[in-house]
Amino acid sequence: MNRPPTSIIVQAVAIPFIIAGVVAVPLIMDNRSEAAQYSVVLPLVYLLGSISWGYMLLQWKMGVDVRQYGSGRTGMSNVLRTGGVKSAAVVFALDIAKGVVAVLIARTVIGTPAAEVSAALIAMAGHNWPVFLQFKGGRGILTALGGLVVIAPLAALIATATFLAVAGLSRYISLGSVIGVTIGAISVVVLADVRSDTNIIYGVIATAVIIWQHRDNIHRIRDGSERRIGQSATKVE
Image 1: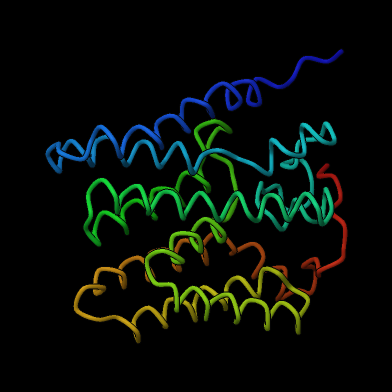
Image 2 (image 1 turned 90 degrees about the vertical axis):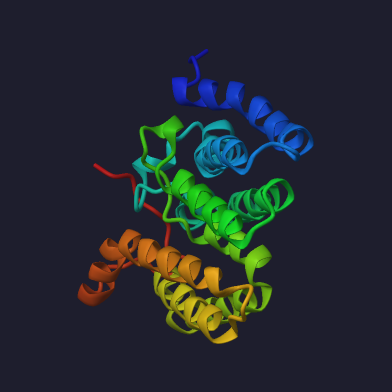
């Protein structure tokens, strides 16, 4: 029997501790100084974001490293092409949950818009550059969307509707993602009020990061080699 990859073992050991932190931190950090709260919350949400569900699921289910297929990313779209719809649906839910939980922890413990935005961005950074996978992860779309669901629900709904429309018409998940996050950021700006002005920072930074992470997709769309919905991923040579 083959020994599981070290990255799987490390994440499997880390996950219970991260979950325990998610439960315990709101209970024990409520009355601490804001500096202490930030010093605990931000590393915790980075580790939460670093859990690479797509990588782990396909290792457990198929014994393959999703980073060796298709785009080489660990996110939902590459899981869809490599492992199928059911695996992609699981990763979809879990990657969104990372962003949702990160913002809820910040809201519960620190309780400021700046803390929520910081936690959402750090969780997205963990997803994109996970410590458990030598800082090679996904593109951040779903984890960023999870944060936006809590920070600005209407903007998240508009971004999702835009993604579905563009991806459905073009058959490009990447194009839907880029246009969806851009419209989502514009929606955050348009819908911002006095309390949520800080959220504009989230919309701008998250969109810039996601577009940067899609630069190879944009190049492939321009030259006609981008994979469309329904096309399987091939192993990277």
